[in-house]
Image (tube, rainbow, N blue to C red; front, side, top):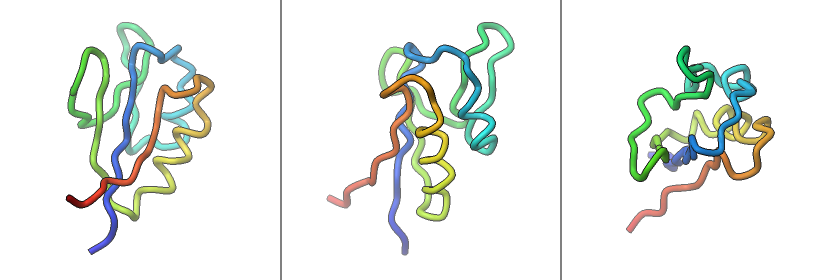
Length: 83
């Protein structure tokens, strides 16, 4: 069994550049109402903050979406630590 990661997204920081969707359309869609990104199947854990658990096979594409985002800290990808 491979490692698990989580995409952590702070929608409050999003400026709607859509770079994340271009890099990883599997995980991102642009909201037609406000032009900001939505994390597809992301679970809300705080006001306008979302996370999605992903498999190791999707780490690279998720990390790419975080790296191309022009807003520092808007998208992060972290390893899920086993407890």
